[in-house]
Image (tube, rainbow, N blue to C red; front, side):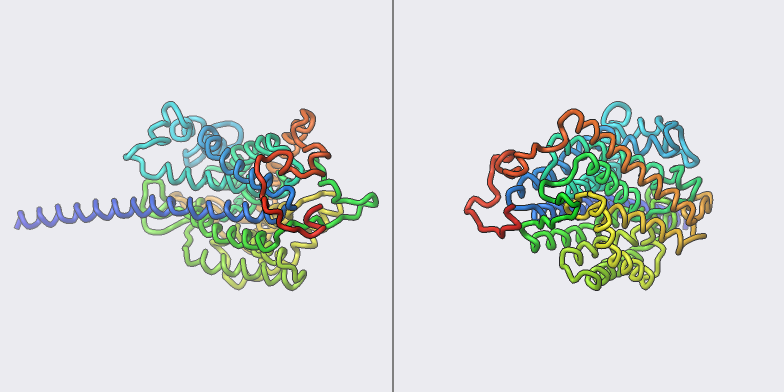
Length: 464
C-alpha cells in the first residue's frame, strides 16, 4: 500500500511538472506570436504612408517608416525598457506598492548589460523576458510609425529619426510607466485604466506628432495665401486603404499582447487571464469588442463622408475609441462608441486644418483625438469598475476625473517633448527639408532609387 501511494505521489508530481512546462511554453509562445502579428502593423503603415504620398516622395516616406522600426529595437533594448520599470512612481526612481518598479528593480532586469544580463540575453531559466520585451518593443515601434505619417514629404531623415527615438524609447514609455503599470502613480492614485493603450500609446504619439508639426510647418502648396487648404492627395489610394486594413490585422497582435496570461511567476493569477492592472478579462471580450469597434468606426465614417480613405481610417479610429475599455464594454456599447468616433473623425481633422496644421494622413486626429476620446468615454461608462486589482484586492476604481487627469498627462507627455525636440532640431537646421528639395521631390534628391523606374503616369494632382 505504501509503495502504491509513493508511486501515485510521484506520478502526480510528474503530471504537475509537465503541466507547468506546458503552461510556460504556452505563455512564451503566446507573446512570441504577438510580435510577428504586430510587425504586420508596420507593413500596413509602410503601405498606408507610401500610398498617401505623392509619386515624387514615395520612397522617402518608406525609408522613414523603415527607420522608425529599426531604431526602436536597439534604443528600447538599451534604455526604453529600463524607463518602464524605473519610473512608475514618478521621477523618484523609488519602488511602488507592488515593488515591481524603481531604479533597483529596473537595474536588475531591464538594462542590456551588467546585473540584468541574465534576463536580457539567452537564459534558459527565464523564458518570458525576451518575448515580453519584444511585445513592448513593437508597441514602441508603433508610436514612431504613428508619428511618421503626419510628417511625410517635408521632414529631414535625421530629424525624424531623433524625434522617433525620443517618442518611442522615452515619451510613451514614461506614459506607460505611469498609467500602464501596477505601480504607476496614475493608476494607484487616480484609478486610470487604459487596457488597450488608447491614451498612453495613441494619444501620446498623436500629440507628439502635433508638437513636431507646429515647428515643421505645412508642405509647400498645402495652404493658400487666404488660409484655405488644398487637398494634396497621395498617388495610390487603394494602396493606402489596403495598408490601413493591414494595420487592423496587426492590431489583433497588439491587443493580444496587452493580456497577462495566467499561471506564470509574473502572472497575477494561476487560473485566469488579466489586464496589465490585474483585473480579470477574457479573449472572448476582445473578439467581440475589436470587431464591433472596427465595424462601428467604418459605418460612422461612411455615413458622414462616403470617402474610402476616411472609412478605413474610421476602422482604426473606432478601435482606438474603445481600446481603453475593451476588457469592460459590452459589444453593443463598443459599437455605439466607435460609431460616434467614425462620425467625429473628419470634422475633427478639418478643425486642425483650419488651424493651419498640415497633418498629411490625419494621424493627430485618428490617434491623438480619438485616444483622448477613448479615455474620457471610459470614465463616463465605467465609473466604479476596478482600475487595479491585485493579490491585495481592489486598490483603485475608475472615475471620470481620473480618466481626465490621465488624458491631460498623456497629452502633455506627447505634445511637450514633441514640441521641444523639434524646436531644437529646427534651430539646428535639422528638421525641415529645403523648399527646393520639396518642389523637386525628396526621392530624386534624397533616395538612390526610383519608385517607378518605368515612368508610370500620374494625375496632375498626384505629380505636383
